[in-house]
Image 1 (cartoon, rainbow, N blue to C red):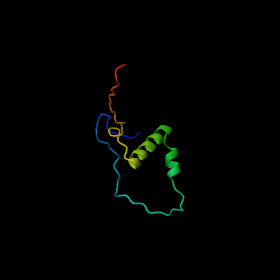
Image 2: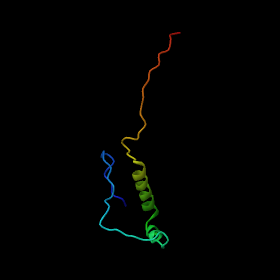
Image 3: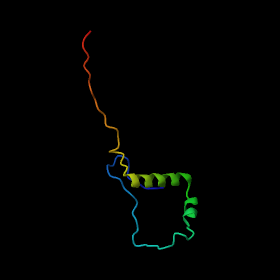
Image 4: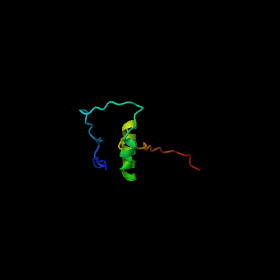
Length: 78
């Protein structure tokens, strides 16, 4: 599971990236990604998809709500 801060917190927390590990490979080599993802449960896979979506689109639940606008209309008396 992905650990995030509680929903009431105004800041988003993303997993830390270990930048000391670098792997160089060829695009044409067989990857072990499929094996990795098959070891995860469907729920874990969906959580990671949501995390990647949040990272890619800058999703912040506290700022993406619809703006509520209140307007009053005055009608002539009959």
